[in-house]
Image 1: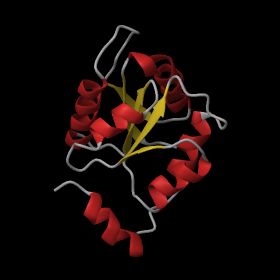
Image 2: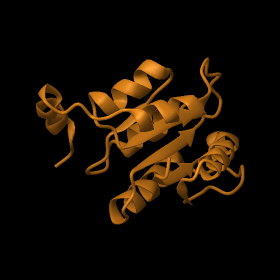
Image 3: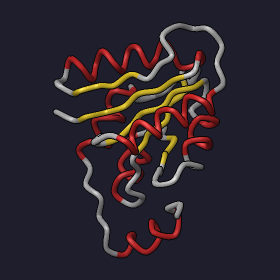
Image 4: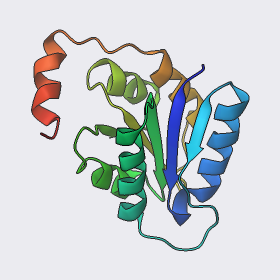
Length: 145
């Protein structure tokens, strides 16, 4: 895959983040893990803002965030200028997040039982190309100025 990816999680997504980090590194990606590094309770907005700041400061292809459901951390991330974070749950939403919305972050829940392994959802996202065209106008309307 050879992507540069920033990861961030709160305590609710810690175990899933660790699993995905290992998978990403084993498949040849460069991963920056901004934490957390254990299951101690933290506030997901703090992690989202830190990961988004790292993404905006670096040369990353995309980021992945984790919390208990993926919902709260994605809402927080979408408050940051330039971030389009999608909370995906199947192959179709993973594909559309990139193809139609040009997402630059994915969010997952450590307490969610996914029907398709998260690794496969990430693969689908990576393999998908942004279609631009008619979607460009819409994406520009949702991109924070």
